[in-house]
Image (tube, rainbow, N blue to C red; front, top):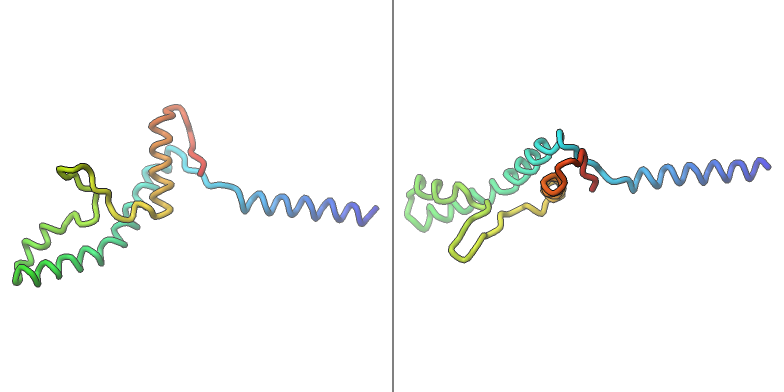
Length: 118
């Protein structure tokens, strides 16, 4: 009897632990702006070294016109509209960005939804 009780308790503990590990995250409408801001902050941290490399490469090829190179590359890595369409920005594939963009899309398509589960 005691062995069966222990097995049941162990099984229930395993189920609780497993379900909490698998449990998905959630973004509410109130948290969406914060999630998008965190996405942009992480993207900018990733983009800054690449942007600086492009500026230095430009300075070398334009013989020192740093002001021009900084203006030209100020939006390096961002979404760009071109004649042939839209060029996607860099680092939108970061997990926090994928979750924030999916939540934003979810709330746009479901105006009454209170939360997005990922």
